[in-house]
Length: 204
Image 1 (cartoon, one colour):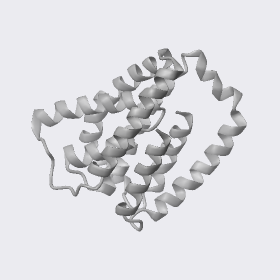
Image 2: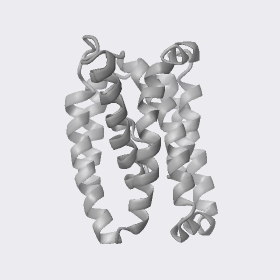
Image 3: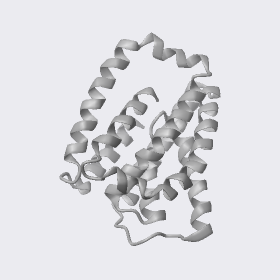
């Protein structure tokens, strides 16, 4: 969770060269719609994660990784043809989707972009590049809430015991998000998505 927070916080400004912050801010209703559910989901998900036995949590994460791999292959490669829903139906669906994504993000200790981007493309009709930045804007406050909830559990002391590792990984992650931001728009999603899905399946 700590590492994901570093990645999300650094990736958003690095993407600004391709997706301006003004364009992201212009879609604030979409961000607030998803946050209405994801913040609550992150709090509950983190609470459940701290109570689950390690063996049970491993099984849950494995299933989620497989499911996310499937979503990546199906949802991320879908061209935007407009929002699937509008009005009140879209608002309710956004809150429900946000809640589920918040739970998943907290359980797995990740940002949740793997699910947020397909949701933004399919439910709100966002362009794939814009959806990536919008997902970061939703993920950052969602992760902070989950981070705060995890900090109330004794297991969170693992960060204090692994400070050196955390600093080294954070430095590498910031370099990685910078390079990723520069490559945005050059690397085709048709190459990246199957590779990422494959990595998730190996992890599962």
